[in-house]
Length: 258
Image 1: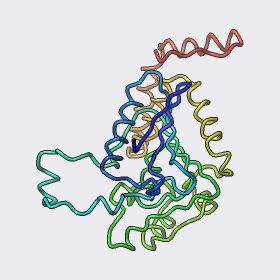
Image 2 (image 1 turned 60 degrees about the vertical axis):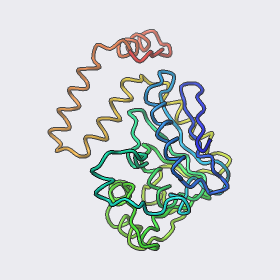
Image 3 (image 1 turned 180 degrees about the vertical axis):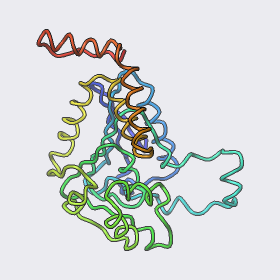
């Protein structure tokens, strides 16, 4: 398996398992990533996911260039015709929170994959870059759009136009990651964050992610109205009532996702 998934305590740990290829994404890996995201979305025993790479060298170095040569079909045929191919990794989506635990090189599509996640933490040995222009291409897995939203225009344009690689300390400075830790502390830190998320009310967590993601694309007035509607949907949920009862009774709440 190019991608493994392990579920424990409401946390799904997804591991890119091609360390011999720096965890690069070939067609089989892309298909398995879509399956992993689908599993996370539909399983009631999963409330949060962690994505990482096997080995110590790489989180993911993007597309496996040896197995992703241009197809024979025209772009129009592939784009508008019947879709028999694997959807691009850039279309991965789940309503549940995802944490990227970046343990090494996160280059090209690997960084794009990390930017699909809601929270990014990195080991101090991690390296980041979007080097596509250096090989005559562009970051077409969402990179040109997500990097600007992640770090701001000037730093984003520097990465996009130069293709230069950034160390973890610089990624932290520009806000590409929220925390940098020693390699041995990476997965414990990711699991600590995931555990805190998993302990919260699942419906509220999903609502917060949806509002934060969609709200960025809306005028403030529209986003605030969306927020009020979500609040109304959750107002009488069993979990919201349980949260208030637990507070009054000075105990930890037991949320059921209802």
